[in-house]
Length: 160
Image 1: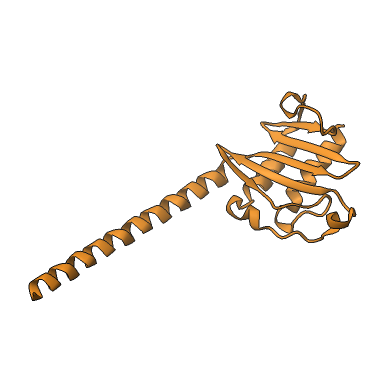
Image 2: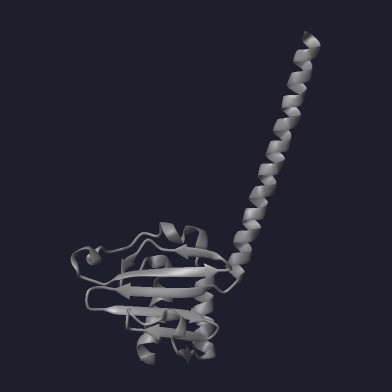
């Protein structure tokens, strides 16, 4: 009986060590994936809309795709080139965003709840993954993405 108890305790100990090793490996893989995603320039889609206002901007490969018409086909928008200096700034600001926490960003104002501002949202596309904010007021983005949003919106306004 003691032998069986000893054998069971030994097998449990070995099994738990393997579980901890697998958990550590998975954690390291997740960290590496997050780091890889931070080094890749995501495709950025910014949308702001209210009853009388619509703005869609897609930033991808040194180009902006801009629409002010909510019924326009987003896949057939004309490309507007972005200068190298502006694109480098967008790239730097986008890579500084932690994509894993973008859904948890807190908005500084709630003007969109009473038509005081258009409802805005930004989405980061990396490979087949979408990282999307919960929404915020157009013109009042969360502090963590404020410079990036303002840069994209300013460029879009200057291009049209």
